[in-house]
Amino acid sequence: MAYLLATTDLHVRWYVVRLKYPDDILDLQEGQFELIDHLDLRIVPGFGNKDTAKRVAKALGLKVWRYVKIDGPQTTFTLE
Figure 1 (cartoon, rainbow, N blue to C red):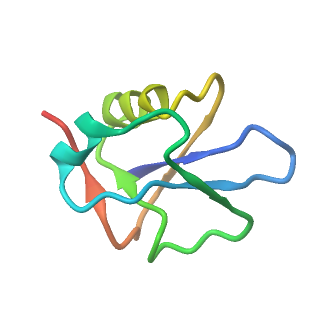
Figure 2: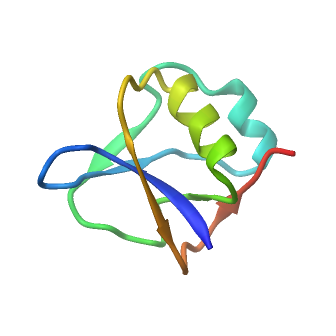
């Protein structure tokens, strides 16, 4: 299972964060994301726990977001 970050709108959009390694999360900057309308598990990263997902959301400068728990993202990142 992994957690994805999504908007809180009625029409959910998905946050795409370009990461190669879990430690890349530490270098994220505000606004460093893309929003897409259709969930593509090849490009939307998953996060191994809510704490990691929350850390990413805050690093991106998000004020509100939705967690979506799902199986199957192509990449999953977790900070220990």
